[in-house]
Length: 372
Image (tube, rainbow, N blue to C red; front, side, top):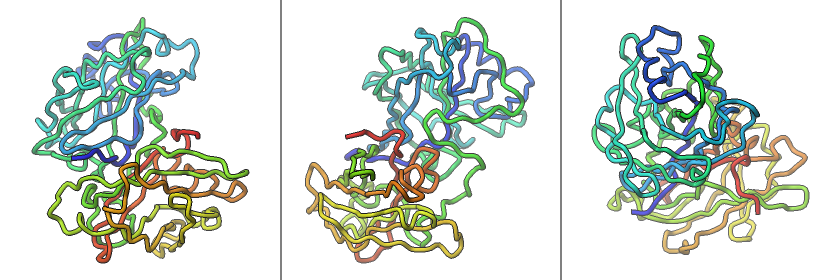
């Protein structure tokens, strides 16, 4: 089964500690952060982190993979910014019913330590999974693949994580700082490790694409790659995604064998004048906007009437480019996409002719895009 991009990781926290045991011991103390994720007293300012995780993960069967990044530190002189700190653990905020759901963990294809499941909070009504012993450093973390396998009772990211839509709250745990960091205030700021952040929690189900359809990722063979390429068109920018066709999670599903009818993006009403043109492999195609009556500030941007069978998509994919006008209100993906300021752009693809399957995916916005 081919790899396909998953939804975004929605929130990340740096949690830097003097040693792994220091953070673990914090669980035993009565402290304000006991009810927060992650439940440790540690530095949570992501500007002090040397590491990030790409906001979009990939899924291949039961395997989920995250890509690590090394970044310049924004807080020069911080102990957390030292060159000898390491990316020790990745932690995920999960449902309390998901013990034993994560099996093996690998780093760049090599077996890592077994993950551990833990409940926390005074009532033990919260849970997390730790992927420990990653031991990634500033020298080798860039592009490293952190992969885990999922199984029952939570075989998908939507089942595993509290958000329920495939996105997941996570934290990077650093170790190697020379002295225990100061604990955060009772309500520490929740800053993004990737440029994706939730300020209030999202609704239990995502309203987009504002219709009744099967939103399960992988019901159609079509998807976009996780990282767009940015090109110049005069003062404007072209954001180009690679449309590919792979395997479905259920090849027997009728949606899997139908053509791609259209693609929709979750956008904003103020962005209606911001798209100049849309191209597929350099050919200009039609575009449409639809209002959202139940949410007047929202809008849906569409590439309609694509009617593309899987057999017509070459192995290299089809380049889909959106040209955003530099002088309009939404000149970048970060401004064009709803929640784009949190690091990802949400889209839905529909089957033809029934349009009853609409798997939701996402890709990174401009701050993570490759510049061509």
